[in-house]
Length: 505
Image (cartoon, rainbow, N blue to C red; front, side, top):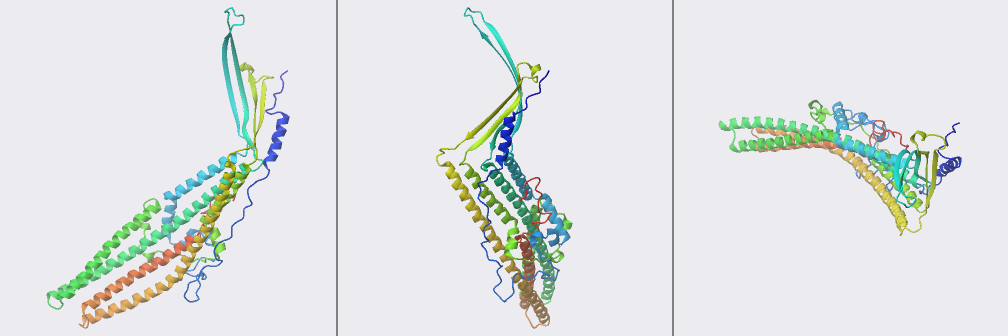
């Protein structure tokens, strides 16, 4: 009658493994994590002039467009903030093709794989093996020169556990937690890259729109001045205008021609920059015709620093790196204590292949090993000191990230108030110079002014109009910057990533 096969491990071994599994849930030597206090004021800085606060309610934009409801910028999808359909399409093209964003995603995948490698050390690594051996040797038992040849064969199959460390003092768990926090840090870094890419595409798009509008203004000015030059040349031919008037008009034409050439080159560079960010050629029907053709962005309520800054992905990434450094201290502390590892296997062993799985061929091994550090030449202490230094460095970098973010938001808010006043002043300047140009032209036509007065008025009006385009661009770029520095869209479903089986932060 065939006997039942012997279990992989005997009952005592199973009991020992059960006890070891309970011990795995033991203590951790990592310090309790405490978030550092924010090293910045509790409110945003206000502008120096007047009593207007930079944190004005975001119910309307400067152009009267209804603002986004007062909620954290991180919770506002970028599609709600950038309402222009052609700009949205350009941003979506960049999100699909930009190589920097692809690289950031691959870094996240690499960090996720590294975490899973560390996590796997918490569990036994089980493997199977099979072997076949055959050897022979000659013997001379009588010493008379007669020899005999003996042949031996041995076959075996086994399933075993490699050296599995019992994590009694949390060393493996601390390394796993460190890898997990590094993974979260890279994930937040990817979100930061995505937010930055959206802002860069919007900025490049607006710059192209502004330069296209400036180019159209320069071409229109050149055409007007060319017409004036032709009229003055005809008047000069009949003696009704002086050569000085003709040369002055010609100088204005050539200056405008130079401006047109400069802006044509700038528009070409803007298109190349947009193409680089998009990662693919941007279709011509998506390119802007001017700033007026780009739908205005909505306003944002900045909120309080404690609410805003802790939602920025770069600050969250810095905090996860701090948590990882804190977990490494636990691993460095655990290195001072003994490490216990278990190795075991079970299977069958037979000298006959046909009887490999027969009764009485079962074999098993179970080995426990303990490694006690006695003298390491100061390496363990140095490792712990290094872990503390890394934690202190991570704290410094975390605080620096908060201070930098606070300064960026404060600058954007202060600039927003200044640009609003500057735009109104520039619009008034354009209006005044337009009237001055009209009056000087009328006085020249009746002979009350020289043509130099008209040229000065034309050039001043042209510069003021170009300046207005620049101020409007600066205002729009400031809104893009504010969206970026407030962490716009970072916590929306389209910006955040699934954990994909990884522990939640």
